[in-house]
Image (cartoon, rainbow, N blue to C red):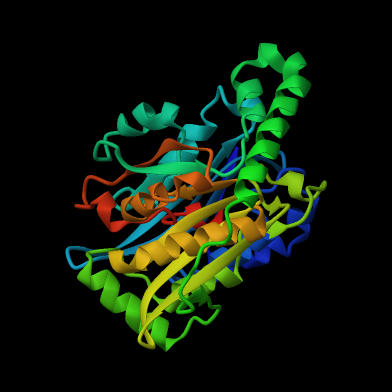
Length: 361
């Protein structure tokens, strides 16, 4: 087994190489690699990817996403664990531990982890380098029923009943579609709209707002990078995309940056992610007085884009969603776990749903 590391320059050369072209399992998709190379928080010396090879084949890899924690209380370079995969044939060996130790040698004191399986929580904590796990709580709001796949995955013995369950799901959705048709679009102020500019006005607003509210500082260039260099492309899976274990294509994937103005002054900003039929409120920077309008805007967007589920972790916006409970079938609690390194004093309250690689996937 050989471990190969990749920096920005090496990663660019790697995805253009003949070796990458012949790999049956690739450690990163081309567009994810291009996005990593353009990361504004990245330096030329940062190692982004560790890959384990055996006989010129990929048997495991682990990657990080460099970032910066920038609040009034702490300003430090950090990185998020962004992918970790080991071939099934090698999971009983030392590939996983070797890769993890390689990352820790580089990033032990500023590695953060989120979006991990809850079953891995104890294993990560027992490494002795993280504070106890903390959570941000949120909700999924179901505009349309989506229980068929959930039931069949949880109860495999019911797979033969899948057509019946799917029929019941369609019936529920037809009934609720009539109910939604009886509810007209909500009134929304003309001062709130989608806006694809990532300019100085936005940069100044974000700097002021994040500082005043003790949030991790983000600038216009950060959101432009995410918008321009996506990890998921729209399209259908093919042999090429299946070479990468993690998702790299989706039927629908888009971002909706939303601005809120008050007397011609930028007073709020939201960054929404649309993937297939799910809308996620990835980032939100706005005072409470603007959230009723934003909630109405989102539900109108849901109707236009035929969204099935809204995911939101902003407790303030969730309270306004509750006032529109006739617009959804049910809400379901969810939580986002975070592990912070012992050497840094961090609070999940400074973060939003999109932190780490969540906004990309």
